[in-house]
Image (cartoon, rainbow, N blue to C red; front, side, top):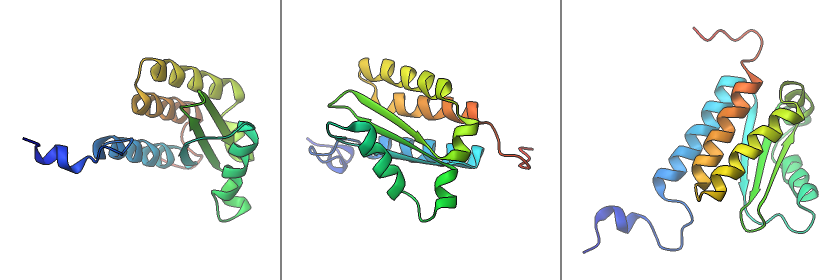
Length: 139
């Protein structure tokens, strides 16, 4: 007999409701802790993955000021590609090396079959590296 939990997860869904909650919470906490605007794209990025990720990044905000403090994680599991795009303000707090280490951590988790866990841990690493925005007291 199917349980109520089984019925809430349609077979054509990629993520369960609980996984979506984990992703949403990780994005929210990363944004809240750092003052940066984290967004996530999961899907095919095409042959020019970097260009497509930058295009998605440019369309992800309402203004240039909002883009400056934004970070996009674009993940194409089928292509085995992860792109991190940062705005100018975010790039000062997240150097390429920090982004590369977060991507390495994510891809290791992905290889072990843990897409959601890899994303959550990657967001934590990026948040830790970015730190708190100036002027924000944490206690």
